[in-house]
Image 1 (cartoon, rainbow, N blue to C red):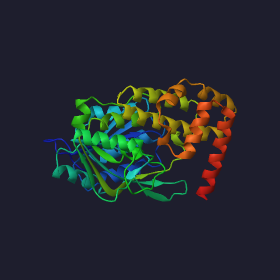
Image 2: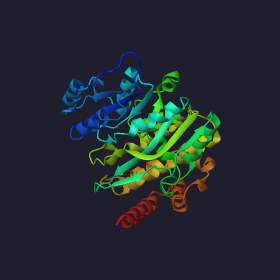
Image 3: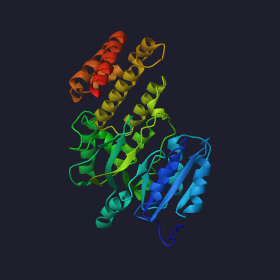
Image 4: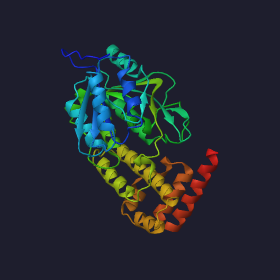
Length: 355
């Protein structure tokens, strides 16, 4: 059945879907949006110059449902693709969905009902199911009950606390943490706030979603977190986030510099320092088990970066778990061989724990 739009008022939510090389999964993604129980939405599919059948699939869906708009553009990356969607979005709120994922039918109805009770809400967050490499879903980013933070200072303090908390290694499903609040895809966000501060994604290959999420959340004054999980994240071996690229450290460094310049608050700086340190740790763990032939050379280049001298004088190492502190101290010491050995050991332990 061809759905129609009510042109007399803006849709409640604009859902923006950047599409690139996901022809295997795009139909399920779009079907999950078309079948939302909240029907008053617009769906913006942005074909980012995809070389497969994605452009045709987008156009086919647009003929089936008048709520679907399609943008075709030359390949520019996820950030510019999302920007293209934002530029034409008309909804009161904006949501983002990755084209290889899908979302439960009640997701946007549940989120928007919060807004109907309190129209000052800037963001409504819900939980996510992560699919692992064995196609099993793991529920995460859930909170035990509905939670709300009101007032700009309250929201800011909550956000900074989340970012400083070691969310990757705390007990899940107890309290929100830094990774969860920055997810683009598990929330609806007020479009008026986005446009007032002209918040757009940077044209950088890594970290653009994190930067956008931080910039937006720092402007919020009312956040609600729902205990239900609605979003389904698909494990995709072909995703660039699953591959090792030696250039990734330079991308992380660029994103880190951009985020540092967004705010001079000492607590905020500690948050961004922590994110960079943890991202570098993950990069090194990937490097040491990769096929890259010049691992020690690359580690030496990283450890010679002047930023580690700055961090040694500024960052509070006790914000990290004990064994991560050891990793950081070895980086400070500038010994690439010791960092390599520890990285191999940490990967070995991680593999044992997953068995």
